[in-house]
Length: 80
Image (cartoon, rainbow, N blue to C red; front, side):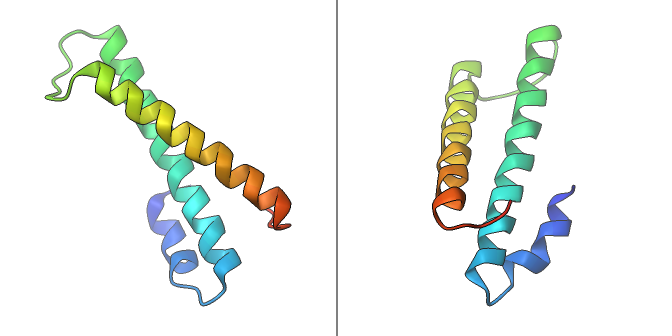
């Protein structure tokens, strides 16, 4: 899935559809950041201005938020 494919959900008047789109967007971003971190680890020549430790902290925080959304989806009976 691509971020552009989630736009319709984000524009929905149904909060459940917006919730699903938010979850999908976050999952995509988490995956992309993870891939970037793996690239940094495997290739020291990869250019980036931000300290790797900060990028890792961002990744772990995003993953925690993803987990919170998963828990909420169970409570609110929203199928992701």
